[in-house]
Image (tube, one colour):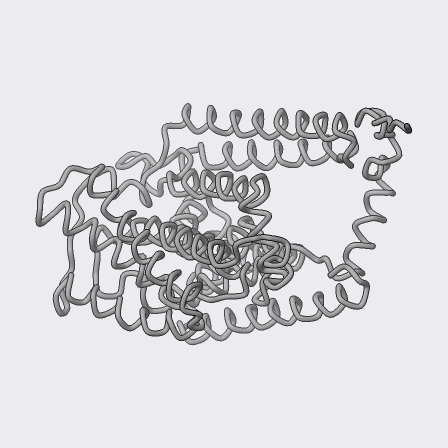
Length: 423
């Protein structure tokens, strides 16, 4: 009788299995990925840098100032959070045209619960989140169980939620929000000391977590980042986090003798928190891997035993719950809920933010950080053009042009990836 000897996983790993261990090797590998069509967020990051340089040169007295940067973060928060939720739907190759008004209806639920029914803060927020969950279930069932195209379903709900929000607020009316906690979500800042603690915690968690992950992958005989790659990423992240914290911790109020403004904007902390949580869900869980599998090839995922309908349903639920958070952020910025909360260009900017950041409209490719990068690009265009006194028409033309370029880059990179056999 023959016996089979199982080699311990640790004996399968060799240093040469790691990613490149020299800077030249890292650069060469990255260029190879680019040629193969895996451009990631590079176009958006280059565009972001170009926009910052251009607007800084054109308006050096206002654009790069800490006061304007703080305002820019507040301006982008609602759209960026909404885009983070849309990433889940776009990963499936689907669309949610009603996400903006879903946020508006959820914010309306919050406003009605607090102002007209006298509910405390926590139950009111829960009411908004549950509203998002129910809406997500409704849309998800129609798409995943009945097989109705998401474009049709969400076009119908876009109109329906717009009507629901109008009935909530009354024609031309608004629901004022006077709760300090809600108002500060998009307009307040953390104490400086708390901002530094959070910044250091983020650096420690990332550096320590990525180091332990590499160690675990090596023990299991899997390919891991080289020590050089890990160190470079850790240094870059540390420099960015500490520089941003330092910049925003300084006094940035135009009239500090009247009102002091300093500390990390709470909106930025919320976006970073969602970025970490949602990225973990997509990249570190079985559910997240199934989302990518369904988005890449639904039929292959089904044959592999993945419950495609359940994954689709769950993505619409997650997207709508995050839309509820976005709606609260939008209402917080204006201190009220109105008939256009989540309306106008909110959804278009959110979809544009996700696509500009690198999320594919064809499904199967995208990350949560794409929404953050793309949302920043959209906000900088809006902010910078406003400082140059350009008309809203010009802003929309430029934003549309950037979105068209992003979609073209996505199409070209997919073609290259297909030709190189990466997909």
